[in-house]
Amino acid sequence: MTTRALPVLEMARPAHRESTAAPVAAPELAEFATDDLAMPRFHVWTLGCQMNHSDSEEMAGALLAAGCAEAPDVESADLIVINSCAIREAAEQKVIGRMGHLANLRRANPALRVVLTGCSVRTDNAPGLKKRYPEVDLFLRPDEEPELTARLGLSGPTAPGRMTATVRRDSAMAAWLPIIYGCDKTCTYCIVPFSRGPERSRPFDDVLDEARSLASAGYQEVTLLGQNVNSYGHDLPAEARFGHIRRARDLGRNIELDGRPDIAELLMAIRDIPRIRFVTSHPWDLSERLIRAMAESPSVCEHLHLPVQAGDDAVLRRMGRQYTVEQYLELVDRLREAVPGITLTTDVIVGFCGETEAQFERTLELLRQVRFETVFAAAFSVRPGTPAARLDDDVPKHEKKRRLQALLDLQEGIGLDANLRWVGRTTEVLVDQQRPASSHGDGGPRLAGRNRNNKLVHFDGPAELIGRLVNVRVDHAGPYALSGTLNG
Ligand code: SAM
Ligand code: SF4
Image (tube, rainbow, N blue to C red; front, side, top):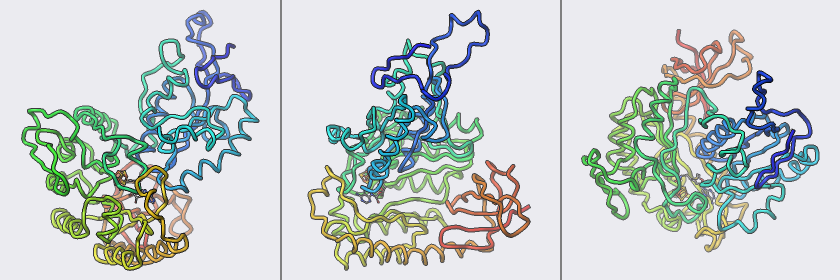
């Protein structure tokens, strides 16, 4: 057994088990084996948004292709890849709080190596990373993730990698499909443009090819992903085949977009997938073409996540969101007119710099007016290096907490009212989970999945239904989920 000297990690032979290098079936072929190395068993720990989950699936695919095996948890891994979230300080603390545990694991397994990637790794904070994350051996910015296996010495001409990497997807029925990386917006509170860089759209045909292969693999649902999917295509070259696309930004400054593909064109071109979703949409770029595509494509689900962040114009201006409450409400009207029954969900930040009680009340008023079905709310958390870090974070912590609770209390009632309207209706559910057997009914397995409006629906039924689209009659509604009976 030789020990591979890795350029960065100098990964030693795992102390606690035998090599995971693929065995050579016939002894006479031994001399052709690429290498006799202990390949690390990896575990990817993912925090944060859907983009991180999608990136983690790509990294896991690359590590599997390099010949590594996947470990079920960090405790049994030789290589831990932490895909971090920096959107709020609490998310970063989750990782920092695990450093002691990682140190213990390393004592038990000196071969353990730890990679940190995701939004906590940026150029601007590089000098302080080792101090903040002492147990990390290799730091990779999100845009460096494709280099993971190469930086570990696990791919390349002399490496033991055996296969072409394919994404290792968590689900066999619903897939993430990244269409645009990075973010060009300048929301003053947000770290994402600093960690993920400027927008880069994937070529139109690449996205369609991947959608086609997902369709032929039997995927029922595809979610197009990006920090702002609505600006997809603006950085791609103009082409004659997109000559019919003439669009201007509907809000804010006007930039040249004619002749370039957009998300509406993608939504209309993706075929043979029963359900298409897309996330996240910035209201500034929600074009009339996109609203029309949502209305016309039978696959696009009747749900839109449209982050509003605040219900007061002065706060929105300080946040750099580029729209007013009135413009946002106009969009809501247009969406509800074009897609009857559409479910709207949103993100809100409470206690942003300078937010007065009256301004916060206007956010509550907006929630009462729009009646979003789900609101993802959080207290403002200062992110060093962002423009808002130069503003006065003057809403005290206890006040942010109170506002957050007041908002959640209000939203619970609104969410329950919206869900009660489903009782008695039959709805199509993509079954994706099995829960412990229910204490009532016939004791069959409890299944769950989402309907097209993204409502979570629980019901009893056989496990063979997982991965299928079924009809469920809704019998009960709570503020966060529905439950019902499988329709024979
Ligand atoms: N690109 C999306 C958008 O435009 O809304 C989502 C970005 S971010 C990953 C998800 C949510 O985190 C944001 O919508 C915002 O509500 C919240 N968020 C971002 N920065 C924050 C901060 N500094 N403090 C609290 N919440 C924050
Ligand atoms: Fe952050 Fe704004 Fe970009 Fe969303 S659109 S990732 S909130 S900067």
